[in-house]
Amino acid sequence: MKFSAPVVRVALTTDRCLGEKRDLVRLSALKFTSARQPFTILAITEAFDNATTKPDNRLEVQSTTPFLFALFQCTTEREGFDDLEIEWAPEAAAVPAKPEK
Image (cartoon, rainbow, N blue to C red):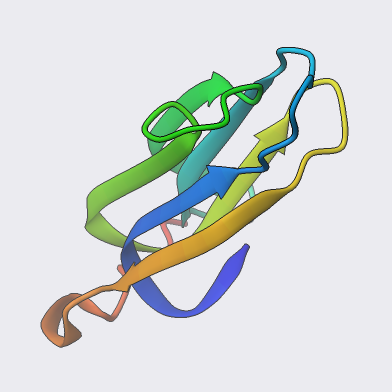
């Protein structure tokens, strides 16, 4: 995911599919670094996608460093998510640091 402005928190709910087999899913907050090493992981969380109730079906990443990218990763199957939430960075911190060279 690429956001139109820097964020400090991203949260989502994994899909609520009854009888689903247990697969690992991850949510990562990513900072663009450089063309040579495009991204640095600022925060990561993982869970199993067969949960159907909170808090087990909820993934959230948060960082004091504003970021423009997040990655929702599925390891073995097509996966959906609901209820994407983002928290915009405060205006003073909204300009991300320049990429390292």
